[in-house]
Length: 186
Image (cartoon, rainbow, N blue to C red; front, top):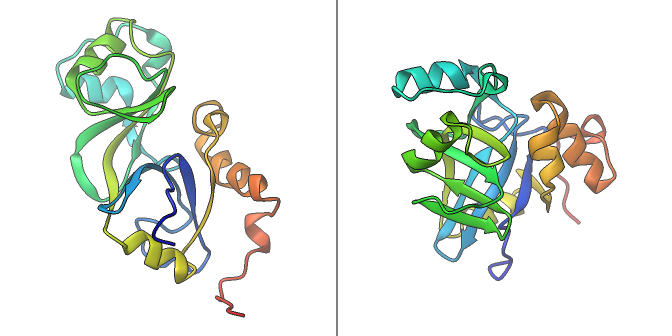
């Protein structure tokens, strides 16, 4: 399993996931290598709007249609730092290219562009990210903590948060309710 690259895959938390950070979560893996993995949870809105976040950062948010957009819990690492998942990838200062069309940016320049109405067409803003040490994610998958499936931008950007996990499950052809919380091994 060490040679598997799960970049641009969804991690679907299995029903037996007891970690409160990840129970019933859908996470996008943004980078996966032999050094470890980095991702953001995409179905956990927090009690903060984009307007509130921008006000805290002293950035004006011009486009009114973005004012009530939710900010998400991206994971338990660096929860005081913002991460912008966006399409198209664009020319921002600190962008990790997930795919040629999808980026994860941590620099302030993207937020200033969004505030001015010049940001990427589609975005999801998180506070924090999810990280795994070398071999940790592979081990968790072997322990039946996660299902994986190639990611789909429509699920990330076009569906409400509560519909993302069931939609990702449908990519596998199963419903979340049909999963057992008991692990099985052949």
